[in-house]
Amino acid sequence: MVAAQLDAVDAGAMPILLNTLPVDAEIPVSALANASILVLEVSPGYPASLERLSAVRDLYPRLPVIAAVRDANLPLVRTLLKQGVRDVVGLPLPHAELVEMLKEISAELQAELSSEVQQGQLVTIMKSIGGVGATTVATHLASELAARNTGRGVCVFDLDLQFGDAASYLGLSNQLSIADLLEAGSRIDGELLRSVVTTTPQGLNVIAAPADMMPIEAVNADQILRIIDLARQEFDFVVIDLPTNWTNWALSLVARSTAIFLIVELSVASLRQAKRQLQLLDNQGIRGDHVNIVANRVEKRLFRTIDLESAAQALGHPVELSIHNDYPLVRAAHDQGVLIQQIRAKSKIVGDIANFLPRLGVEA
Ligand SMILES: Nc1ncnc2c1ncn2[C@@H]1O[C@H](COP(=O)(O)OP(=O)(O)O)[C@@H](O)[C@H]1O
Ligand SMILES: [Mg+2]
Image (cartoon, rainbow, N blue to C red):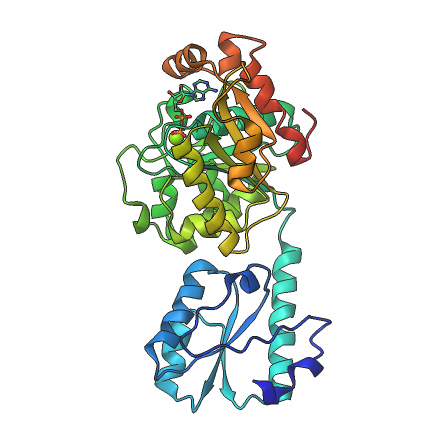
């Protein structure tokens, strides 16, 4: 790889980063999060090298990978292509061949990009532990967005495949769900997506969780990314409610989110889990302004054992958004399958959630 004089490669002003790693070392994912093409040396004699390749494919299914192999033979090339690598080059890598290949792929990527319409924002709601109010935030934030959007609209996806209750909170009893989209495979298109959507009287589009529990790890990562990418072409905002347990597809979705809201409670258990989640995101190179912590169920009295300031300290991350506690009100809304504002027009909770909107470039 070094012999290919990567520094001198002019592939359309594409910055090139060379990482030298042991054959069994994990690839620093922070390097991958922003990559547009990966050229990866694969040593077929080492299982760890092949596992590393498939780990990258799982986590970044849409990242084009070129496998660089010494003494490539036809069966090996075939195996690699079957694993989804875009191309295979021989090592030592001829400079000219690499340049040609990078130019070709970047032209293809450019063509794919320009044929795509402006992608909608992907807003992910995560929770520290179950029951902290993620679904309440997802449904109400999406409703606030929908109330202000005059464009392509807003769609909330309940991806909490086992315990999803977004549809029920919104008073919808769906026959169709995300399961129908997952089953559709490559037949998925805008029309099919819209046929599974249910729209609330307030104009919020909803894709419900499956009626029957399904194993979250059984979901095909490529398929779910395909569904969400498609939704981003159809809607201005796609809001997703994730399961508590991590899977590769959930991480991939979080990695491509334009905004993340991590919902916590001011309890020791919740903050401890939130810290672990933040650590996990950080390890994946997911950090920055678009990661927001939301403290839910904050008492009016400020005399709390753990207040927002010390929560921020414990998490090593600012806690700038908070939501008032009003259990009877939230409970009544969920039980009746209506929005909180339909029970109480000027509720503090809805105001608190509307305060998130500037983070999405929308006026509160
Ligand atoms: N701001 C709040 N004040 C009082 N209770 C709340 C608030 N937000 C959520 N809850 C309650 O917490 C419970 C869990 O909410 P939910 O949104 O389903 O959480 P999650 O999706 O994180 O599991 C519900 O019973 C709901 O009534
Ligand atoms: Mg939930």
